[in-house]
Length: 93
Image 1 (cartoon, one colour):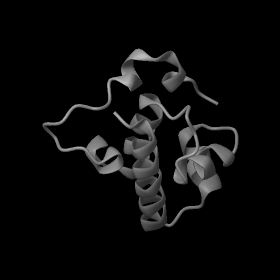
Image 2 (cartoon, one colour; image 1 turned 90 degrees about the vertical axis):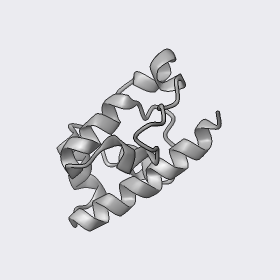
Image 3 (tube, one colour; image 1 turned 120 degrees about the horizontal axis):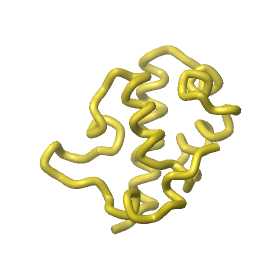
Image 4 (cartoon, one colour; image 1 turned 180 degrees about the vertical axis):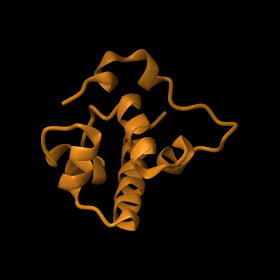
């Protein structure tokens, strides 16, 4: 499975949802409990490789949406198992 494509797709969706909500990267970072906006900036362009399921869950809370809206999966499709198996996908800033 190509994780790079997932990160790019997630980044596009995060940026779109953030703009729909009318908030800045810094405001989103604060709402997610992050220390800086750089995590959001890198995530939006698919460059942050520490973007894990805990971040997706926080985004769902902030944007009041389903996980499938952020990660581009159908309801009957599984998320990439790499996120569950590899500890590097669960690190936080």
